[in-house]
Image 1 (cartoon, rainbow, N blue to C red):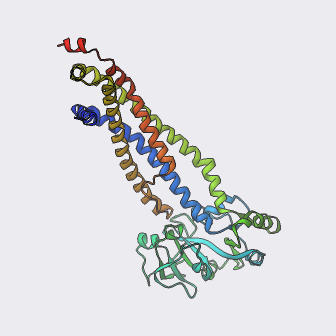
Image 2: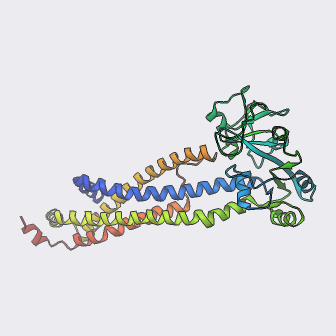
Image 3: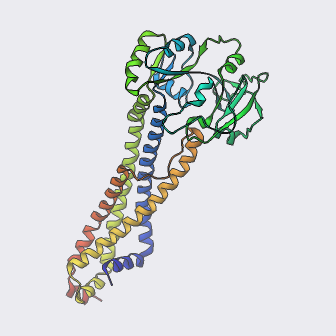
Length: 396
């Protein structure tokens, strides 16, 4: 019988202790897995969307708010700007496109975004975030194309009509534009982007709905440059030469992660590792008590020819098995947590997140957990190594 089999058998001779220790390790591993995976995946998704457009143009104010409201539809717009400024910026050297956006209304919490038809043809790389699953794009005002998530949540389908509610927060006192209904003419394919949570229409529709607003105002514009290397140069030119604010989406998102979410990640990881350290203590105590209880068994193994090194190794293998089982169960719990949170984020942000991705950070974390488990087994293994054959055999 191999040492691996002996160690496995000894573990399940004390099922309750083993199960509780595995669960304690698994909880720490699950927390670490979820934190690292969600942090990496959400950052990746945010930065992917941030890379789609080189600049966002809007009213002067908070650049992060501008990016979140325009690219991710997560915040209220900073304000309005003159459409004439966007038209001038579009003619700048190295500016290849500037898509105006007009926002002000929502339908059941989903933002109605007025824009130009050309935006619907926009692609970057092999991605087409405005692709249709059915229907067509608008051809006149008050025709709308809805995101995949909007269609699923609201039940809207081709040919249905709906009316927008003024503002970005659902309120019983909000003004409903009942006299200006939209007709659904297209439903977007699932893109895994914020577009899944938006409703797009011709920009003239938004201007017409808000008759008291001048049609020469827009909320923001999405800008594409000849090369991303020009982002900061063009940004500075726009900020100095126009009465608008330019922001680099990917830079603002990186700041958000570094300043806010980076700290949250560190705190949660510290908690996860603390749980694993406590679990390692459980492994140590559980194995140490087990060694005391089976001293006679170990003495018999020694008498039958087992060396001190083999006894030492058998106990370390027990620690290895417990930690490995904890890692496996923890990975499964972490994957389930990420799956559930991923469903929530898909609803709230339009981001689809993988259950668990084996990143370099996660492999390092798992290795650290396994090492802690083995270290926890050293003291019990040393106690077994020092077995006194004559004394332990003589005990009843």
